[in-house]
Length: 399
Image 1 (cartoon, helix red, strand yellow):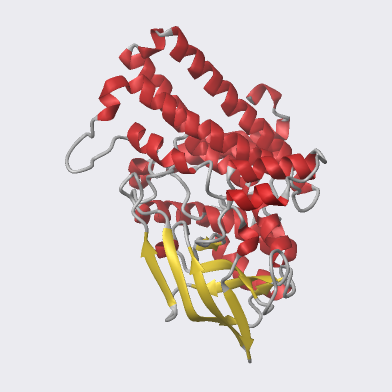
Image 2 (cartoon, helix red, strand yellow; image 1 turned 30 degrees about the vertical axis):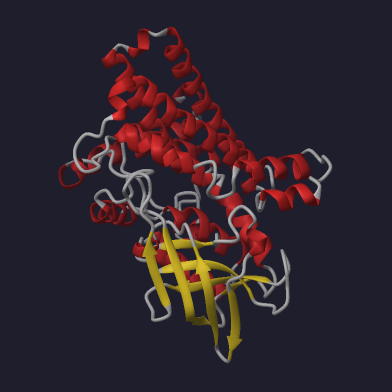
């Protein structure tokens, strides 16, 4: 809300708004509204070009410290940037994982050499990143990671499989949680490695989703190599650093994600007005609750960001994941109810989905990936509220 902005923030808001208005035109006018969950295949090269254009003007990594190529924007200014980006209908960002997950992790835990090597290409959108966490037997139970790495002379050799790796085909690098201590189990013996993707020993296989698209992938490492210095923290620190990365993902990154969420909500509301569905009091109530949820999600992200500004995020960030994933899944269900019977029929053969059908299908995954809702509730109960741990038998039964 602009009326709550300080004079400095009002000036920053005007700067962001004017730049977006001037630049999301001409060559990039068609990029407005492109991409997003279930639509990452959409105009990828055009969105990449747009983001590099942003980088050249100093509008990537705005919350990073200036010494690392950012603008040193305050929490309030980062909120303003994402609000204005949403209002301008900016395209979904292709550098999200590098800018919002890996970059802050390197800033917090990396060496000076790692910061010098990896941060500038993220700021310039010259290298794209993906996340190597989940495995077939280690999804929500991430501590069950079996991918292993062995230090051989001046490099690590990585063997194993990752799954649900977003945008792996487009990525240059992957941050990989793997087991580097033979015989270790659970949280012990894990390390956080930075692994180049364009090499022999890395095999990427797209996973066709309910939407018919393939944002997610399987990644197989078979003797893949990375330099010995490409480990963040010490060997065995992987769990701590991986959890910090998830905290960053659920803070600043959530605001970037909400660019698409707000656009989707406004689209559903307009659809309800156009079809007359808004006259149904139950649907109107659900739209109102959805809008309120969007605002609550924004405020919760701001609260999480304040914690990040004071240091590495804590388990409270699990609240953000629980809130946004549930909200987004419910928005997909609401969109289908607004469409009514028409939502059951594809736009064309063989499987041409409209935006609302794609939203409904893709958002089913939101409460599962990046930490399922059940796991987030356990984290909140045990680490935030201090409640007794769930019995081990119950945990084992759910795996």
